[in-house]
Length: 322
Length: 272
Ligand SMILES: Nc1ncnc2c1ncn2[C@@H]1O[C@H](COP(=O)(O)OP(=O)(O)O)[C@@H](O)[C@H]1O
Ligand SMILES: [Mg+2]
Image (tube, rainbow over all chains, first blue to last red; front, side, top):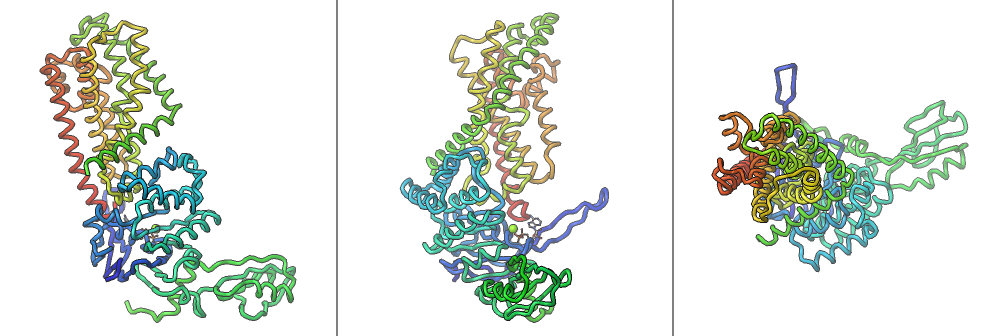
């Protein structure tokens, strides 16, 4: 049996909407439907999808704070909702858009509180805190009130708070949303290390780069269904995502003709052109090739975004009968 | 088990105490307001007691004591709201509270500990000054027997428990109502009137007074001050007052537990 197991899990929300002055209608929102997957102990899985796909709903069900409408869900053999309090000792959670830190108090106080909540023995607490503080570069911030921390610093604090009690599994719901590049890099490096120490990690994001750098296995969820489950290569191979090189030329120009890229869009009679190339490739040779033969003025590279990946997935798989 | 839980909630209370101690400007403004308001009410009461000496069985000096102790209790007991339960209302509105549930803590005890930490700070910072200033400016009937003071503190603490229980129930209504400002306003007005914050309950006419004295709000201001003034005879003395307060605290805390369980079930099954 897998460490995390979902079988045909569904969650339907009933939303009451006001319609007119006195009438109200009930609408059903299917947040997730027919989720079936397993995660083995020690895995690090990327759980990606566009906004509203059902990622947070899944994480909430895994932590036991939301009950599935149908299906079976087990974490470490336990039904999270029925044994929420007992399971809490074994899981760590970070909800990127919410903080559990004490807003007006120094960061350090929130960690002491976590120690009390999870009854962490002093020596283990100190060891774990020391490691997190070290790797997440929180040392100088311990005495800073949380409200004065930047989003990235606060997030690093929240991640630390989720790990002090040595959870077996860590759920992260959009931990990098809105973070600056440096904070993102620090967080990613740290998560890789956490997973290397044996913690199972489920990372929810809509940032493909998080996945690229961290996860061997990716699940793509859209409209509450898993539409892809496999390696990253499968998402980015020949039929996978493409990056886009946007080039500005000194004047009007015909479509750029270089190897390994094709023009997908032209503007201003060719003064600006969009070239798509496989996401797995480096942009450098392409840039060099363009610069050699065309009057290059400016350029930028766009990463594939999650909507793009999903659009490709649908194109790649045969249409499902519904 | 017990010991761990006690330590946790003590940490929560201590943290909240420190948190409130960082709001310096708000504290100073609060002390100023309560003291000034005390003087305004003191002169109003004096005018009233000049016309009707021994109104409600109070001497003029009792009435002034009532005013300044009332101002001292204002922030501590937080009849109007303004307690830690306001933060809880915010967390319910933003949905953060559902996320709080993954932590292995008891929701009601958590917020009670938070409110006690807040009250402890406000007792020191906002409770003591109005009475001290009032006692310097007027002749107050303050007891010299330390046991009376102790009984007063106990009664005020029970009043705080009752006030918390009511505010907690108001906050919980946020699980069903999109906007709790209506419930909060209604609870605030009931509290202001029936705690005796506007006028002492014992100057109310017959039946109204008798009923008001038995309602939970009386325990938030009227009863503790009666304990201090030793004017509890009509309520069966100190024992009667404390028994009434303990009963209300127990009933309302139990009700809070019941409603919490329902609210949590609603969040867990319906997603808030
Ligand atoms: N408590 C709720 N009540 C009603 N609808 C909800 C609730 N929570 C989520 N939803 C809906 O369920 C869908 C999935 O939401 P969510 O899991 O938050 O998506 P994601 O995290 O992938 O952005 C969305 O359509 C959202 O509006
Ligand atoms: Mg989400």
